[in-house]
Length: 309
Length: 256
Image (cartoon, rainbow over all chains, first blue to last red; front, side, top):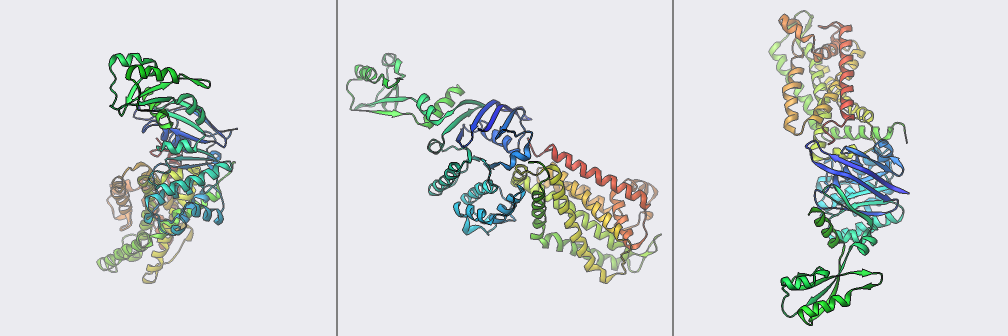
């Protein structure tokens, strides 16, 4: 079943800025889905439309088979959103905020679940302070607790770990991973691409309001990510025009004085040997060679730069 | 799932009520003190003077007017401050993300505004009653005008909160529209003391009917025709509540 099915979603703001352009996206139920994009790409607009804080100009969204834009009350009960901006009512404590939030979603008090959330998000000690007294990282975790307190089936996390230290971030992800393993669908936006690569099984990349990739993380890293053969010489490499031409088939480039050549894969075979010989012919025997596999960050930068060009 | 989110509405009402109870010095004690100061000043300034045409002493005339003025201003403050704070601190997104329909939001916000107005009015009554000749003549009139006035001002507070982008814009509405209208609606004088042109203009001022009708509940007399006043107040109450509901429903100044 599909948790979120977004069809031809567009948004033009009153000032004429087109934030989303015909975006279609499918998030399978139970997925850990990364929605990536540079700043201003349209990720937050997309999330805000799902959260009902921004109106869509056109398009449709289905949440667990229900029309989200038409059946808002139903949809909101099954959706938990961690907004990007930290904001809390200064009059209330974390515990009160969680009780109020649960109540507003039409659910009766559940001290056990509220305590569990406070415990897992390491807020138990601060549960009765007023929110003004919490640190930035604590507030960010409270936002996560607030989005989970009504036990939604789909959780959207808009940069939930910004400003959270490494240790806490790891524990936060362990908790979200547990929820995901229990069946909660997670849609995540983050600028920590290593995190996204490690956590998510599906990925979509959005740039300038348009979707430029949407597939499983495995296939994106397998099909789109390239591997390079790198050569280190005694002296830093400088590519002459003739050498560049000779190595054209391998998209030769120099990174930090190291020569890098793209490898092509066909099934289990690659053109490793041809690339090695071509580099030797141009520059002689290298001091060292090594393989470099593109990670999510490299693919992301390549795709978004190519798209921008 | 269909049907009303009763628990959600109740929770929002509790949140909006607890907010003003958390700062009761500012929301309840301060308005009571202001009203008492007015009364002390006017008591000595006006002495035992009677209000022309109403056969009632000025002090007794003044108390219900001041009560109603404080109630109206507090009902307005409850909704407007909640909205503007929510917008400026960005906490309003949590309300928009929650499954609370526009009708449910209206019920919760306006009930909390009415509650705050009644608490402020009640405190003033308790404090001032022992020092005056005041009697409760028509409870239904006191409640009708008290509740309707609070609903009108609660709705206007919501609309102002939705419209304002800054505290300055909101205080502009409070200081340049709400304060003059409540002050110039017969709190401190009988409209019969005004020149004819001002009397005619006052006939279109809903605040005048609210204050006059509320006072009528205590002193058993007033400047306006009760039937006309009730009709006028009902129409204005319904119109302002419906307008606030409609603007909320379309997300006016709340959603891009």
